[in-house]
Image (cartoon, rainbow, N blue to C red; front, top):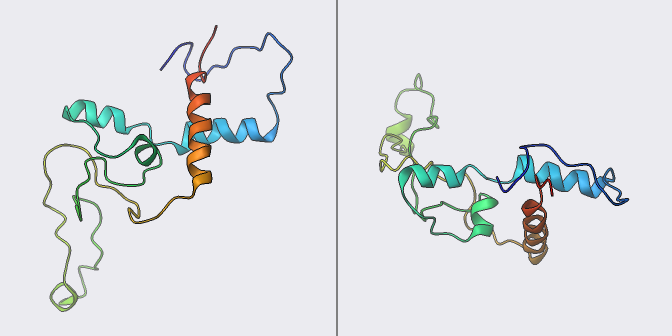
Length: 134
């Protein structure tokens, strides 16, 4: 948190239009869309992210760049259908690396458009003043 009271926006001193659709959409996506929990996860594990801030915030890759990593989660096969694991192969979900950083749940091969990066930079400028009181 950079300043101010969490979730509170100070009353504007100048005449600004803060109830138009773009402003609401930007604040909503910053509050609910950005992956902001990754900083705390890395801090408790005493690790640093390997991917760029753009990919970390947009959940566009594993934070530690682990390839084909799974840990926990639901099984992709039904337990009462015998033999599916042997027939089609199964995913080992009990092999964790002990860092406490969850596995990525995204398509890391997706190529983002330049408009996505421009939107990220604009939202990054807005997030600096998200809770500012002065």
